[in-house]
Image: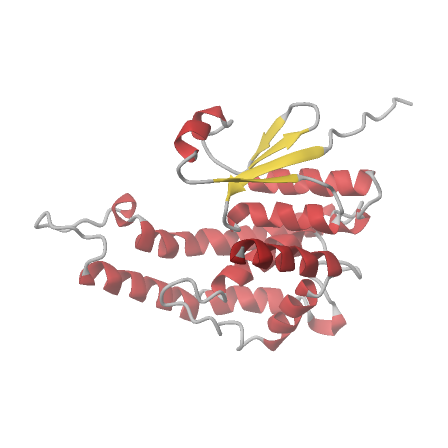
Length: 243
């Protein structure tokens, strides 16, 4: 039999000082007790770092053997495999259960892809083709705010309930997590940061109480945050933010 080569350990995760698409990897590494440097790049540093990344974007996971891994879902699965190989947290990406985890991650990605234009209309309207005919500044104008408000409120009204319905269905019959089994998987690490963002109160025209209509999802959200490693992680983040 061929000897299996040990996977290079994750060492440093590079992303901005926000949760974003890196948060799922941070959570997975904390749950698996994989030590890593949480390298938070400032927006001032980014122009000089950008050309050094594989695809001109973050996050990037730097491995112990010098390999750089990009693309947040690939990073997440790599961490899941490491956690399984090392026996630290085999439940994150369980052998034989990968397909269920992959499907749930793809569903979270669908939700975020569907939401993306509603988010970016507020941040970078010209990238979505919105400009003022008279040459005046569209960004920050009453028209811009009106379009942003309409798009976001419509999405929360029509699309968010659809996805919440898909997720809530998974908690029927006493299931605790997105995928079968008695412990969280990578899919939960992917979904919870999205739910944190929607319920943060930090997105204009999105009510921080948007999860209140979904008691199963709210209970799930609280269950995930009660995981000791997750609880500790967010306590550390709160302390760092206030220091």
